[in-house]
Length: 463
Image (tube, rainbow, N blue to C red; front, top):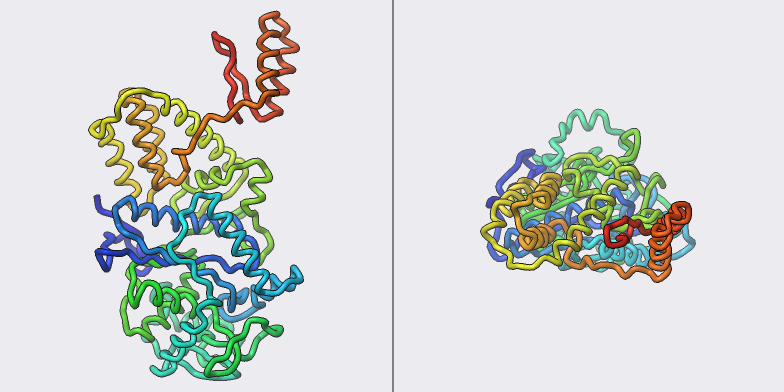
């Protein structure tokens, strides 16, 4: 069944055809590690993971590269504002190196909790300074750079199709754009290498042909993706905020250096997670909610994963705790059904599964339509004509994409205190002591369990 994806470069859904049979090259933008990632960031990484899982589901061998930005990223993508790493170091009175290590580890912990498949290669910008300098030198040799005010700039006027990803009207953009850097020849030009900081002294510096300094933000992704995925590769992902500046600059510098068009065949971008009043969550605004925040409120990380699956990646995702409650309850019901289905006897039949497997595959292969795919999962659970063994087998196949870790669902051991209260409540009900029965139910609820009455006694469930 064909896989189609929405290509930002062409603004259309396209049939996915890899450049090479042996490997699909996938590059996904990772975090700038100056603070914890927030749940808006995590939506992007969950989208990346769903895409990768879908490629694997379709039998494509994937080489996945993700960057870690630990140098050069200013609070504005347009070479303005504070240095993000320095901002984090000043906030916590640590070195930028300590900040980078701490928040990289925190990010990797979030990835594990959300059951996100690890990339084949994590590459840190600070580990690839040599590659970035070499790429800048290639651009310099081809006449795409200029040196002014102590910094090396990319000259966008030398690129005929600059801004094609964002479909920029450069004349209108130029008229409306405030040029804060007097060294720039053109408003869209960007820094490839800093020797003169625009802010406080930078700890991270390296020798270069242009003087001791450090790279701009945009050059790292080009240098590292080219190193690990070659001069052309299949898919580059990121948030929609990367389209007008970061990814437009990546394309310009990469195609200028390599002479390869297109440098990347498919560009996929996810929409924002937003709060009330349409407010985008942002680390720089200090208005962010972390995965730890959700855990402190009693949510499992996979509740958030389920929540994200319920909205298509190209649609804004409105966050509220009420909506997250709905996702938690749905995941809880799904886990309960999984436990029931696991106990069923018999043999699964691929023939009986065919209808739902084809339906699910068609939906997920239609530009990762996870909301419809989830609906198909619930439809098969309601289908009384489908044997339990087939339901269980199908759900495990679906979960290779959904990533809800359903194969590992186990019945939890009831704590002794909860079991004691349940037995006391059963005795109270047998004596028709309804007041004591209600009091014991409340105690059971407070310990995180619900109790239901059955003809043989009671049934306890974890909330």
